[in-house]
Image 1 (tube, each protein chain N blue to C red):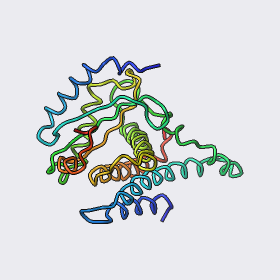
Image 2 (cartoon, rainbow over the protein chains, first blue to last red):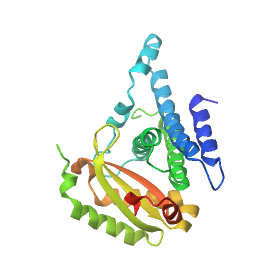
Image 3 (cartoon, helix red, strand yellow):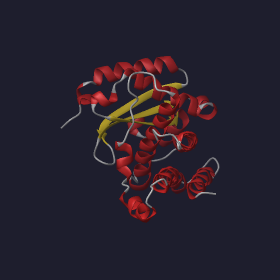
Image 4 (cartoon, rainbow over the protein chains, first blue to last red):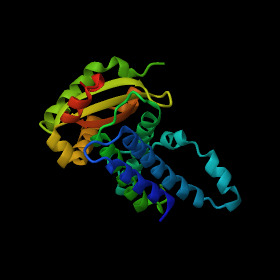
Length: 140
Length: 102
């Protein structure tokens, strides 16, 4: 199983720990891991599709997280076609998870609820599906 | 430089009230805060309280509808902010008692 899928599975396991009384540590790690799952999914495809193998590692290192959000895609001229709509799901999901991850990792004052974490994981799941539907398209 | 969203609280309040009205009783209330996100970019954080039933049985469905309806009423790029949305159930907020969501 690809590394990104393993991470996403880990995130789900972490989120389910503790039953009705989950530990904040599990919920925070679940959110953080869901973000990194999507990050690794996107960067793996991006780097592997680079035509010069000798530059792939360097390219991966240069790939700053924020740049992916700043590449936000906005459909031009009204209703988005299906591929555009799916790409927008990926971009919006990445941005939301990136912010969630930062709060989960660094803002110790924020308390996470099960619903918040469940929603974050659903966002990651949807982004995985959307990306895999469009990854071979030119626009992606 | 501040984003124009800072001066548009009335417009945002109107949109929020409309969305809560459209999605009641699944959506109990929506609070928001304009500030900077993790990278220092301006952002608007929406904190959405869902009914317990909606949170347990149709969380994602309602969450997506909240995001869609807010985006259809508020032009976030023109306001100079990135939107973020987080969701809790009413009983979770009752237990956590966090001011920003109250």
